[in-house]
Image (tube, rainbow, N blue to C red; front, side, top):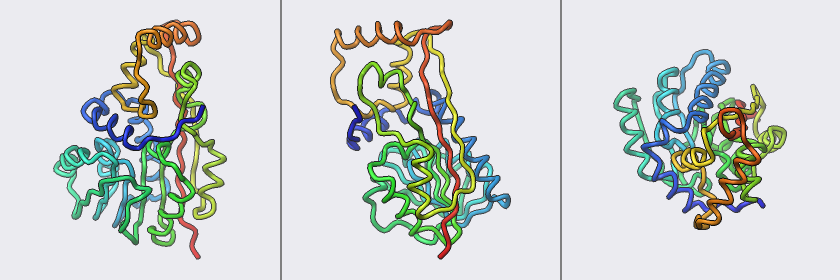
Length: 260
């Protein structure tokens, strides 16, 4: 069953994992590096005047981007207001001429910055309700020829937990993303991959999920019977030589705004 996104729950879960996210979110960290490489290939000069990051979180992607590219004015958005503390620390180490934090849900924020050179988002767009509206809005705030670069997750993401629990996010395939974005952007580069992480036990999988905040879709309490059923089924269905698996399905897109 596809789950409606509870943005308040998402905010609560990610606010609790700001300190642990950097060490636990190994897939998202690798995704950030791949996305940076894609941006640098599309813009060899590596220089941007005005950048908006959607879902800046603990600042891992921001630090990578500022380490590889020159940015004059950086706008960072996140649903979690407490992210500002982490992002301010990044700016102390990797200064920009201007830094602005935009707290709130990007799908409802007003007065977004205009004339942007680059909009970026790492491992965030799967939490949005209306991607078509998002792409349209970002195109409206980018300069002609401006770049939108993002990573997200696709249809096989965390298929183990979805199989057992019977719920999951509505992930888009790469082809669906191309169709949605293609109304407003011309694709420069895109790719997808499957990554299987191995954990010592189902309990270790649950710990990993809690520490990265990616369980922000369900408030149902974990009773003893539900917990034991999950552990038993996970071990039965998804065992490997080193324990059990957890699948991630990253997708990467880099595109330019269609000029009128």
